Image 1 (tube, rainbow, N blue to C red):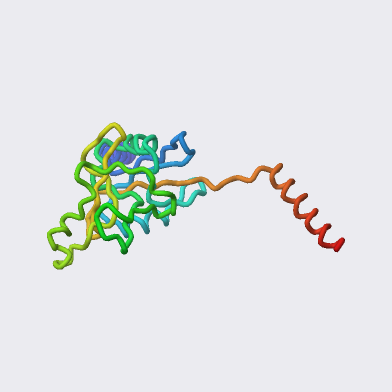
Image 2 (cartoon, rainbow, N blue to C red):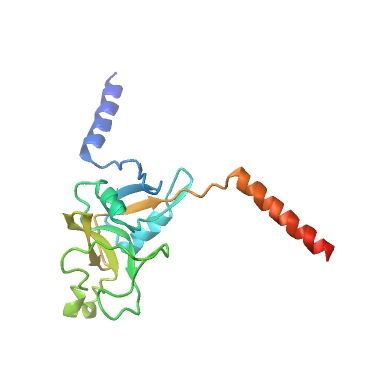
Length: 196
């Protein structure tokens, strides 16, 4: 009995300490699952960890926040998501802080929720890249919220971060009727080639 109490006490301590990660949550807007993961990694290490994770057979990646609805949903994953990485980065060819932003998945970078004054490439604008701190070429969630959720800040790859947001996009399921039509089409193509 003392062993059961000790295990129960340890489990309760873990639950109340916040050290356990919450299970991924599905957004009805696109059917994808999202998870906020506490970590002190830098952006690149967070990207690698996210891409190495899976959930229900779906491969993970740093979240790509491509709409106001998705931004609002991601904002519900935690009360303080400040310095949590998401999957945006800046092209090496960009000549200004606001140019050349893109998503790791190749999706169009048509939506953004930059905090006021961001992206600003600070501290790099002050010349700190000479000191090895690096340029701010990655996106992290910031410590402010607006009508579209948690705002963004451009961050460097030095870290440490406080965490990252993983997005799991379920694989597309091909319906049997679609497979049948594809088979008929391929058979027809083969038949027409034989006639020639």
